[in-house]
Image (spheres, rainbow, N blue to C red):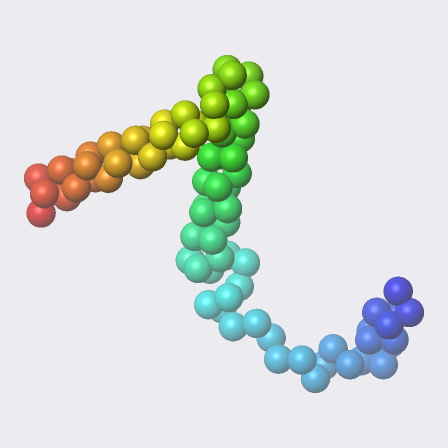
Length: 84
């Protein structure tokens, strides 16, 4: 706490360069990273639901997510082939 107060009172913050817009909180890069984090949390929650609530073994949950990933890849490939 004391170090932070000294940082402000001694105006050490003036010597720090601002974050570039590329790494700003509303940039495309940070928004994409946030979306990937949310997706990973959704997958973790889904895995917990499948294993704890439904009683599916861990390997079964992995198989379900693996098959879902393959299916989604096939659908996206088909859509890109049709549109491209």
